[in-house]
Amino acid sequence: MDKILVLDFGGQYNQLIARRVRSNSVYAEIKPYNKITCAEIKSAGYKGIIFTGGPNSVYDEKSPHYSAEILNLGIPILGICYGHQLLSYLAGGEIAAAESGSEYGKTELFTQDCPLFSGVPQKSDCFMSHTDYVKTLPEGFISIAESEKCPNAAICNEQKNLYGVQFHPEVTHTEYGEQILKNFIFGICKCSADWKMDDFIEKSVEKYRTELKGKRVLLALSGGVDSSVAAVLLHKAIGKNLVCVFVDHGLLRKDEGDYVENTIGKNLGVHIIRVNAKERFLKTLSGITDPEKKRHIIGEEFIRTFEAEAKKLGKIDVLAQGTIYPDVIESGKGDSAVIKSHHNVGGLPDIMSFESIVEPLRDLFKDEVRKVGIKLGIPKELVFRQPFPGPGLGVRVIGEITEEKLELLKEADAVFRSKIDKLDFNKRPNQYFAVITDTRSVGVMGDARTYGYTVVLRAVDTDDFMTAEWSRISFDLLQTASSRITNEIKGITRVVYDITSKPPATVEWE
Ligand code: XMP
Image (cartoon, rainbow, N blue to C red; front, side, top):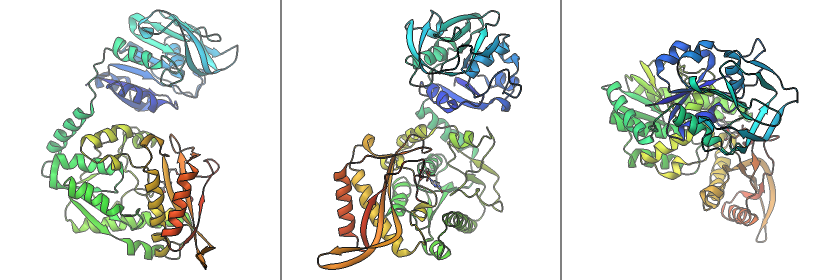
């Protein structure tokens, strides 16, 4: 399989670059610049290298550098932004602060004929974000594009297949960015488009069937996308030798425990041990109101419950985890094995010793994991489900978690979600749920006075959950959700809609 190395110099778009390459069915992997040597690059057999952008100045001593030897490996290189400047610098060019100031945002680009710009008109728009620029070209290089403020907006040494672009071809604001990346991947690196999800499944199944032969494997199934896909994939490889422990802490959404058990267990044949631990969790959480304490207790109890169940299983050789690619790279640890933290509390206990850990999805992005899930026959509703926090409804019951509040919340949340789920998939907010507050207020029903809880409906639109806008869902939808909740659920007298974005608020209330 042909692959491209995305050599990461700290740019904010490193994941995006890899995804753009992969969307062309060519495998790309990201390595931090200080975690891979020239010799390793050479022996790994990459067909091309992309230097990412980064926030630094090449001439700052502390900025990330790389051995100039990389230019002589005979592997095509495309430098982007900082990567373009670094490439020029390593080749002997001069980088300086742009005399005419920074260039930021949509910028007109004038390109010349060359393999990188094949099919790109002479004038187009690109996205720039830089203060430094390549002032003097390295020997053997020519300028192949310019903008008003940047004379060397793209450069190349065609003979050596070395290219640099000051702009960002990976972002959609660069009109012909996709074409430029395609030109690099296929025209210059001569990659074949052979990274396919079907192949991924087939190869993984083959690999784990051999590697895990005769071994017992344990996986903590949460019912989320990643652990479900990992479970079904491994089940395909090793069948009943995979045991999944599904800790139902009672803080799942209405009917969710049964849904997971039926979908992954009964319908897809995965061996699941479900531990109904609601009472244990509620008991430990009794009287606790501090959100961080709740999170901690839920995480801790989860591990203790998982551990107790695992012990009953006798000898287990291998631990399987649903770690995905962003977990690996976001941890900043490159290719080191990271124990994915369960429910945000530092991983599984040390006392459980395993021969090894398998992470069948560690090379995949979320959208790829979803594709694999669909191909494995996992229902769309599960594969495309909205994110759900590890501590579950525990952080959506404000104040003390009582059984009464929890049950009221489950019902209200189910009503709200059922209304939104009727919308087309692409019209749904990215996350939508209910929260039960600790506030009770007076209501009236018929001629009688009522006194019950206030429920909040929350829905947000976001790309990455780092920032989020409150969703402008229709008043009609809010109206029906509100009347159904107050009419059908005794104990809730008031429904409010949260119109705070993130920042300043967070998505969750606790
Ligand atoms: P916040 O509330 O931080 O949420 O704006 C951003 C995203 O993270 C999810 N979230 C959590 N996920 N454990 C999790 O696994 C947690 O403790 C947790 N807190 C928030 C939240 O649902 C949203 O998608």
